[in-house]
Amino acid sequence: MELNSAPDPVQARYAQWLAWGTRAGLACLLLGFAAYTFGVAPHVPIERLPALWQLSAPQLLTETGLKPGWHWASLVHRSDMLVLAAIAGLATVSLACVAAVIPLFAKRGDRVFVAICALQIAVLLLAASGLLAAGH
Image (tube, rainbow, N blue to C red):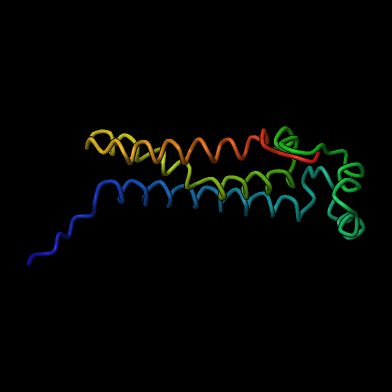
């Protein structure tokens, strides 16, 4: 029995996208953290954090002038919001990886895997959209 040493193209593409996505996310995270630590254009100055940590979520939003949901994304030019964007990016890297392998599954004729990937992407996007949020 001979072992196939060549990686499966789907696995290779997923791994490649995952590696680049995590590297880019980590770079943004480090850049944003360094900028925030040195006080470069924060939305909330780092000196205010200890006082804000004891607040409830609604109070924190009021004190910082933020709105619930994706409002922070409009402030991504601020160093503290860049850190949030990097975290969100790292959390969604696998979404891009799944999208990247769909054409390979389609080329193979693996319609079930194409459907599973598409449904996974749809569910994650729906969850992230906030359309299903309750109790606000």
